[in-house]
Image (cartoon, rainbow, N blue to C red):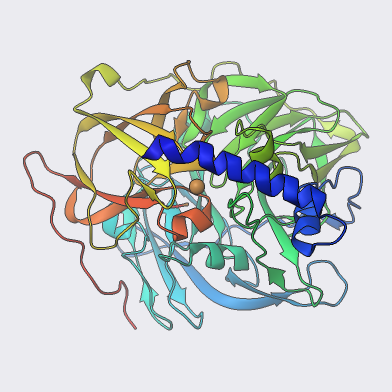
Length: 509
Ligand code: C2O
Ligand code: CU
């Protein structure tokens, strides 16, 4: 069944593409498809606004020694383009996006999430290893006016994580309005390396999102129905800034790239093609620095890169048409040909020296797939995984605590997808049978799934178990996730049977 549908999807894509081309003079849909497929802002962006840097969230240490943050979700309004048109938005502690939370390995953190939106939401800690009931997924909904206070101990390496709502069926909408932020973890190992780490100066969050605006300035959700990938906007916001530049005063600058777009896949590089040093992926530092010219990031993925600049120059972070490995037509309608100027780096005439990026970063501790307790196959296709759409009351499988598993994840419907799993960081064993490229050589929680190229990963479930409260795995193209391309698993003690997901809300009024 699964493999039979794929050629049909492709045939449909080609027919629609031809129709789109033939009708582009007259039929709106055709013209729309024709122009939408060719978004190209390279050379067109006036970099007139300083890049907004999300403030570091204030925190305090409470009587129990916990680092406590407050995060308030609310509606907002913002004039993104400086033309007086106010866009209705949402944000944490502000109009759009949220502050950067920051904590150190070993610390116990607590976050008081206050929901001042007119509707229920949740806040999921993407990439965080934590108990399922603290995860902020669709089982931890926070009612309007309520406060939810999850707490956990940070027990994972230094990394660039993020947070965003995870409302079943509405994640795309909440993230699109602006509810997202970065969560940086620190540890001693990272701190001992000669890397740029002055937040907002030479260590800068770069949260990339595409948006489409209506004539009155509202975010529009025009979906590309041909590719069924989701919303593809023609305007980039970086940390909420349209047309951003960053003044660089050091020889090297560390950019924490986060693709917080709902559907768009980017291929980041520099305008003159110079290489950069990629030092970290989703779950933290790579074993070795990877010298790359480009890095592809699908929604939810992160890469920390260090860019070396020369005095007085201007160089632009750019996204060229990402290689979606999905065939020319799917590429065309899924943004595979779109190009964007993302962020201009403006180097000062005199730059403070910065040490070379070390070649070796952290010892690689590879999981042992040979010891895997279970091998699972997850097929992403249509509106589900393994032929089933997400159901809140169904636990799809249970993993046992302190075991390693191998999952073979495959996209079998010809449309771009990706794969994200909660609670753990995984290691990529192979992509379509081949050893992973260097950028996939470290800890990951999200990985692109090109059609028909199975990705084998190893995961180890440690510390937390709960037979009743599930973690999610899903496509992080949020429209797909909302439409059911998601499943639930629990982590149980050896011999323990999975239970039933609780109903109700998290938090208190
Ligand atoms: Cu970033 Cu399940 O989510
Ligand atoms: Cu998908």
